[in-house]
Length: 102
Image 1 (spheres, rainbow, N blue to C red):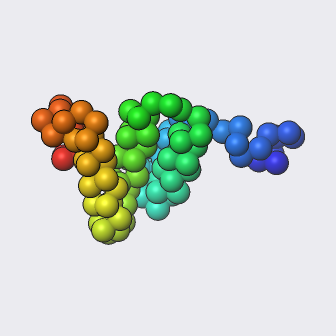
Image 2 (image 1 turned 120 degrees about the vertical axis):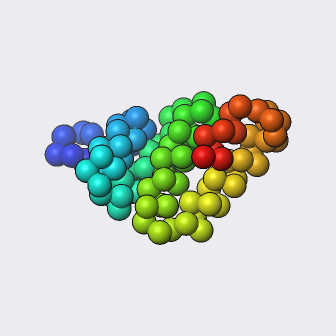
Image 3 (image 1 turned 90 degrees about the horizontal axis):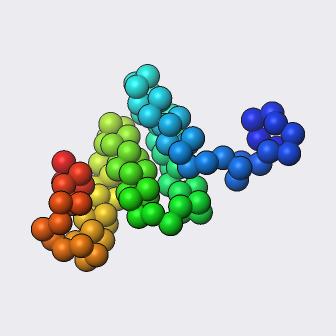
């Protein structure tokens, strides 16, 4: 059971809820807690959404939290993978690549 709700399992959580928890943690200057929430959001979005935009949104947030925690190698790896995927799918000049480069 999860969150004290009978019959509610962790899989009942929505990826958007995990993303919101991560955003709240970042606003409270708690990047470690945000990292955990963003990792959960990434895991859940892969199960619950068919949109690459949703996955990219979660991955960008995760990379930001990782950078704040001085986990730059992992953050850069995520961003490089995203950049390669966007370039392959939409072309290197696609405006979709801008958030990844920032």
